[in-house]
Length: 211
Image 1 (cartoon, rainbow, N blue to C red):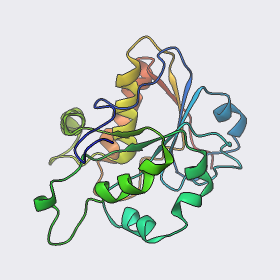
Image 2 (cartoon, rainbow, N blue to C red; image 1 turned 45 degrees about the horizontal axis):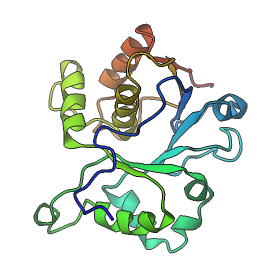
Image 3 (cartoon, rainbow, N blue to C red; image 1 turned 60 degrees about the vertical axis):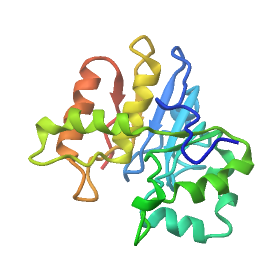
């Protein structure tokens, strides 16, 4: 069993370079795109994955679960968490934040990595923890478009890791459900600009929201 500080994939999930990839965000107005998403070889979803099992399709090869903050604490308090359909269907999990040392996680805990690893490991599926080096890179990429040190969103971090893991040879990732708005602490304008640049470079195709 890996130790608390081990990551099964230091640079993010190992996706087949030639495989089709759908990255499915949680913004409303994604539309009825389930068949297109399910046709991808790799389907990456986030957190509670609204629309899973209905309008956004029924497949999930990788599920990103935010491992810091109140949302994870709420999940850990739910004794039925592992029975959620998207958890049961996921082939692997992505934890976007590296584990904080125990002495840095006091007096009010914000990092729940140890606890969620203990909950997920008995399922026997791969668990990928994104490293601090990726966070440093993400902040550097977004710094030009912000007036202070940027705090990248989970969607940005996971997408960056996925594209890096595929290299430049793979087909463009199909990106759905990204609205670039929400918690005001994330640099949404800078993230949108990065996605637009990645689309212009042929790395991804950003599907617009409907309505």
